[in-house]
Image (cartoon, rainbow, N blue to C red):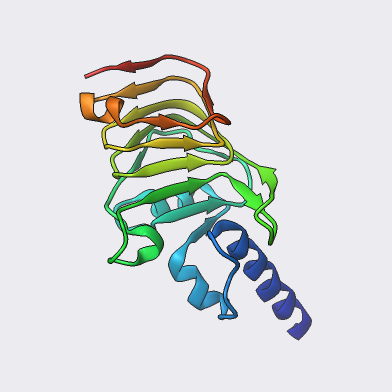
Length: 174
């Protein structure tokens, strides 16, 4: 039993290190969980993206949700109120050197982005994305569907890096 607990703590530490912007500090897993929501099922993902969720949501596997999703709430980078507002859905795993080791797919009919300065990074969202907030971006990610903007500001501040793509339309849809 003690051996299983040590393995579990080690596994959690590795996952947390892969979803943070810097290697996990030598804290207990309970301390580290306050900075990221590590999810592997639909219910945990939906809670993490809610207005009472976390600033970063990292998946451990492909997820499929049969209902519309909304990324809501205002969160600060690394939960530090002195830093800018930021929200991230991380659909990947990485090693200690920040090399992507796995990419995941999140499937849902629709994802509405209401959190400012949000991004999808490292994997694929399969469905349509409706962007209502400023500064939404794709970083090394794919939207296998359309990206619709509900305001001119949302459209004019949208960013896509050179590694990202949208397979469908990108248009204003009020």
